[in-house]
Image (cartoon, rainbow, N blue to C red; front, top):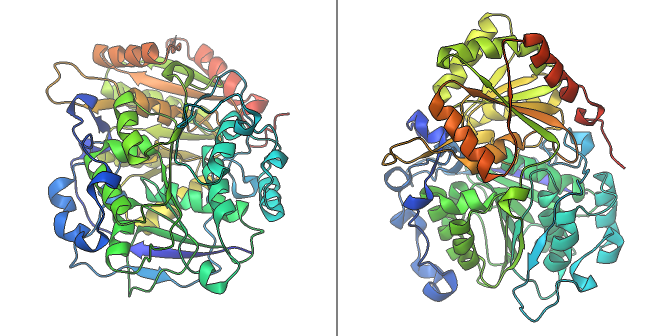
Length: 542
């Protein structure tokens, strides 16, 4: 049976401008990693010291919507990280499938095509070896098959049909994988990891063989939950979690799989707490975000440079802008690629709406009127800044409306408590910044509110620019795994309307205006979706 250990890292105040939580860098400002090729430029583990060359406070300016609390690599004079030695600790988070842990089971949709671009140009993508319609075709270990069944996976999703045969082939090959939110990407790379672990000898079980990097502590904890459920029948599996939090004394990292944020992982390796010589696989989840940002991208590069050159590199995300894809091809050289056109990325089951507000102040009044609809299932409200999240939570609570807020300004243990309450249904309305825009899966979420339209950070632009990628990730918190859901964007001025229309055009979709002058009609439209049988956590498609 699997067990879990938690690696913690000193948390930092890491105070940044609130704007850092709402925006991503503009592709025009993207300078970063065009000249980087790890295989060509680096061949000396002993000559490289991440802490000597990198200072997060000097070089890291996160416009990506994630916080220093998630990715910050603490200076060397901070207390050393610690290993929680409780092997029975169970992180109650999960990706889509493990229903027992309040995630979603996989119900794939049928109306999108997955394009495979093979690194071997002579290979035939139509060859049966490159597609698996059933898990039996993959010839998996029986204990892994049991884990898949425990997650309610009856057959591979479209992304898994194409990805798994390529991921599992020997010798291992790199992969860049893209698919819509809620289609089983996490389960695909986890299955690959578990199928490659050697757990026969005791020493193998306590030696890290796979590393997964995620942009936030919440997503890292969630991935651990997927690994634990899928690997629950593997004897000797130990999962370690390397995320920022308060720390005591350090200890050696003894587990077979490590999941963590880049700064914490980099610090573990530098302090020789995390032995890397036996690593076989490196996975970046939400890879476009991880590689596109100066701070995260730099940290991911430095981590990769400290790892064996022979490992399999796997990059997964729902979005891969072209400029990031080019760099990703250098980070994961000679990778097989699974690609979707951006027009195919929006999920059909999400009803996308918007409504007009008189001004920013009026947004709050409209939100309060929505409260009864927000609590039919669970809802996430995305705002621009930490201060906005706190202010809205305080006002709603004072008026008797139950809700919680989660931002990067909250310390790690409290963040874990808040997200756990939301997952369990104890809290039904969660107010957050972009810190939770990516990857988080809670099966009961039937509505997403864009209180503020996501936008790119580009001070030189004469107009505000929409962040299409973040919009897609935000609304992807609902309508997951074949369910239906609603996304509603609040528009308070012409600039916000223009940004929303930019998003609509980019994804070639329709975002429908609803008239708040007829509130009965507004409620009818929304209830029609959120009360639909396919919006419920218990929905199981055929």
